[in-house]
Length: 112
Image (cartoon, rainbow, N blue to C red; front, top):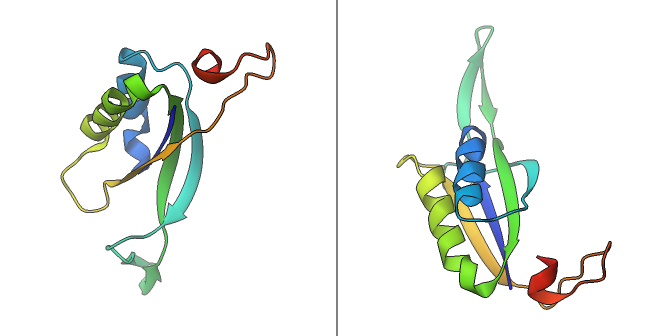
């Protein structure tokens, strides 16, 4: 099993959720986050004063999938989240040692 963590632009969340649903992914955890990468933030003008925005708003979407579904899930996220502009985000893939569904006690792929 794999945990796929995608940090994406907030306005792309609905597209990513829909793309994952279309390939059969049933669950998704979303967190609003702030951060920066190569962009290093940007400057904005507010009431005539210029100020630096160091941390940009992003969304972190996490999904646990079977090994067989991982490549399709990553491809769906990339295609849905990509704008071609700087700041599109990152995808991190990690191995899951074990998964347990609390309600039923199911483990492994059955719990995903």
